[in-house]
Image 1 (cartoon, one colour):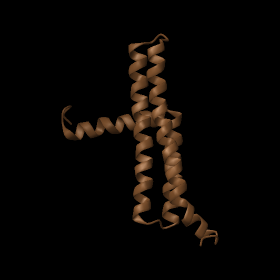
Image 2: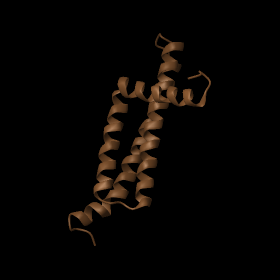
Image 3: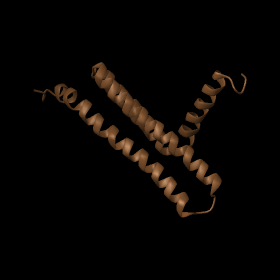
Image 4: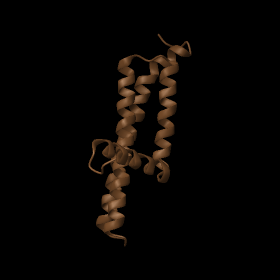
Length: 124
C-alpha cells in the first residue's frame, strides 16, 4: 500500500479510531453507548427518520471525541509543561465533546420517548 494512496489514507484513519478506542476511556464509553442505542433502535423498529437523528448524534459525539484526542496530543507535544493556553485549548476541545454529548442525550430522549412509552403501553 503506497503511503499517499486512497487506501492508505483510510487505513491511517482507521488506526486513529483504534488508537482513540484503545487509549481514551471516554471514547470507549461513547462506543458502548452507541452500541446500546443502536441495539435499542433496532429492537424498537424505529423509523428511518429516527435512525438518521440517532446516527447523526452518535457520529457527532464520536467525531468530536476524535478531534479532542488529536488536539490533546498536539498540545501535549507542543507544550509538555503546564501552560494556561494549553489548558484553555484542551478545556475548550473537551467542551465541544460535552456539548455534542448533551445534544445526543436530548436527541435520544426525543427519539425514544414515544416508542418507549408505546412499548410500556403508556403511549397515546
